[in-house]
Amino acid sequence: MKSPRWGYFRIITGTLIGGILGFYAMHRAELKYKEMWKERLRKYEEEMNKRKSNEEASSELQEPL
Image (cartoon, rainbow, N blue to C red; front, side):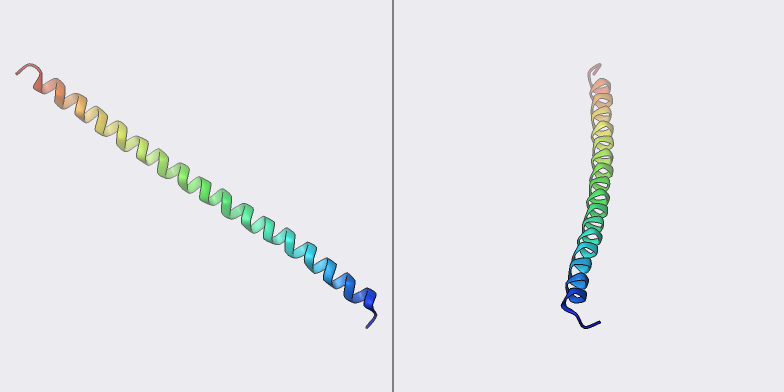
């Protein structure tokens, strides 16, 4: 099986399989990255809401004085 046709077949098949695997890997990495940033944003928003509620509570305590 040393024909050029077999060599072309191997090159084309390897290119297609490698492209599919590469696309899949990058797609998974992108989804994981987006999920990580969504989680960080959610934690940041929770922290900001806690700070805001703490500031409102402390300002309510200081007003009657």
